Length: 402
Image (cartoon, rainbow, N blue to C red; front, top):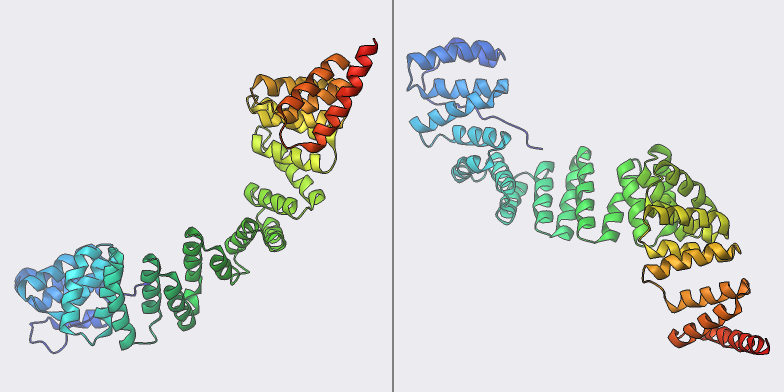
């Protein structure tokens, strides 16, 4: 946001080439450079020629050539305000803020009531990370010109980088009021709120940009994160229409799941899984949607693929066993439970499901053994414990009669 406003020397009794000055005034900078280069060569101590050559280079956008000429001016006459302020601005524009700083400090000392030295000094301090030192200088610049939008923006950014975001926000907003083109910088503040975990404040900012796809995406993702599922769905549906990325569609599917809109989540999850078939997390996500839609056979197929991708992950085998039981595919369920046990992840719940599965296969002796194992291991599962005791008594009676 820095705008280079050069200061020309006026009223100084320096030797000047009339033709060169006329070329400068008329915007014929190449001609001015040629004439002033000759003037400097003819008289190396002519301060005015050095200054005007530097000015001509700067107006051409040739900062690298301008800098040594400004430095030569200050070597010859150290207190020339116009050289300090112009050199400071050019160095700042050239990303050499540390080198610009002493020149801008000098210019500010020379003319403390001038806007440009105060503003550019504040900018140079902010550029090198001296945000606390920049604040009072931004305040000085704002007092000189209360309608300078870049000052308000710089002031706000310095406060934000000092983690004083609540103080920063009014300055960002004033900058955008003074210059509508600066409103987008509020998104920068929103990102800072988000990075520091203040999601409601970030959302407030992002919602001010309904026509910005990136901001709408953040609204969707953050709303999802804090449990505002209806808002998340509305935002993510909009984003997916214009930018159907994998991340956006997955986030929308997650929002549907959290809103218990499983039928809307299913096709999204199916498509994502098809696009990335070896993604374990996607397989598990899709499988759980099918599980909760009471589609056990389809869910089992997805859990089986997930177990294939990560065979050492017990949760996939455990979920697979549950779905095979729901689908009344008991031999397959036992095979999945065997995998869970082999991985050392068998719990009392797995023992209970193994017992009931063996029971349904009329393997009474084996079922009784696992009902008893479950009862020995179980804690705080009163319903399953009651069922296991009743069934164990019946099996003991039946086996005793044989």
